[in-house]
Length: 388
Ligand code: AGP
Image (cartoon, rainbow, N blue to C red; front, side):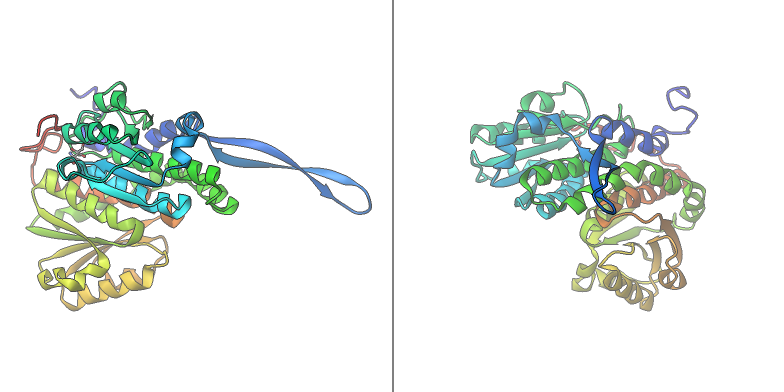
């Protein structure tokens, strides 16, 4: 009823708005700060103490299973749907900062493919519900080959959580809306923590990156609150896109999985066909679809791919496509050419998915509401797919 929705018209909107609090809960006790004293020489022989706070990541799963995790020759992530998208972001984080090769697999494909798995592999299963049949079967299979199994789940005591050797709960609270929102940002957060903690132990992340990312991650909830203030603006612009039969979502690097996730959200609840693509793939086919009816959501934040994504936007505009651009605050170039612009606060590139996902969740939500769809319980979908 109304009370459980906390004044929101739907669980999905409530869960979108809960994300800053959820991520605080997810990081509590895991992102820690300590004061360090360093002796500083001043004039002559005098020494003074300089105190600084240093932030760090503590994951008990790593402390308890150091050997297995640090010696992993390869990591295989198995998941479905939104959790698989989180896995794609995890891959980039882990490869960047731990230098361990990572493969991201659909659990349903992996389990039937006679995959090569060895005892030197760590298999990470990501599942909000912890009950997805394919993901559960995938880890049972991997276990037979002697791989070490790590779970990233939300539901405490769920089947997947029980089947794994260790893991980390995302602690975002029960997710009721069928379209996953806060679980996604929680999963991404845990994967970032995991990459930081393993990278630090292995010495594959620089002290500077480790400090910077940890600090900026801690600030993400506050920045998410800023992004949520765009809700009314997104509700307004959503009205102009209910006509669309198709949508394209583009992003690169860390934002490519966000594009996939945005497209999935729109498909699930508004029943508009949407496809997510890495922006540079557009010219290898999808660009043929662009005309004045085609809305294209482009994540074009100010990172090192910016210029390339900007030229993709120009290509879309040259074909009269309608561009909804997600940009960094203060971007003047894209604001001039895009039809709609949504500004995000600045953060580190690897943390941008946590912010850029929110406007896409809101866009899908408002388009679906405008179309009169049942947002919390879309047709044909179940919250967790416990049968094949
Ligand atoms: C997401 O919005 C979906 N409803 C769906 O793709 C979901 O993420 C998938 O079924 C996996 O569920 P799980 O995380 O509970 O394993």
